[in-house]
Image (cartoon, rainbow, N blue to C red; front, side, top):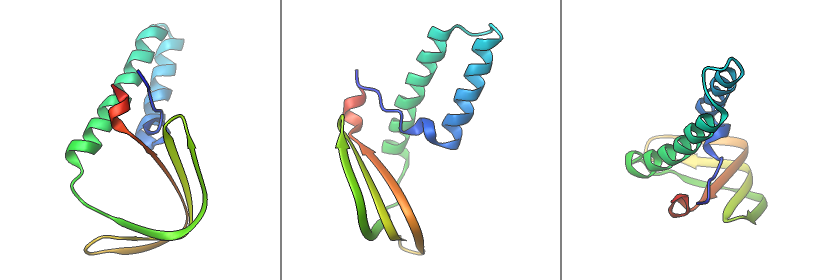
Length: 105
């Protein structure tokens, strides 16, 4: 099974990793179980994004860098404009990481 660590760099993911590390260090959780929790987190986040996110956003900007490695696309945009029905937001730099959720398992 291919596992992506995209969601782990989010605030929720970082807090989860810190908590699991602390639990492993104080002996209340085995390292193997901590890894299983992280793998389940990846799958749950991918499923939630697929089934619960309903809004659409268009993104335009200057493509500064792009990369495709291990079935993961990474795009870095400069002067990006995010737009949905009600809101337009200009952002200086944006990193977008995209992967195929079908590869999660």
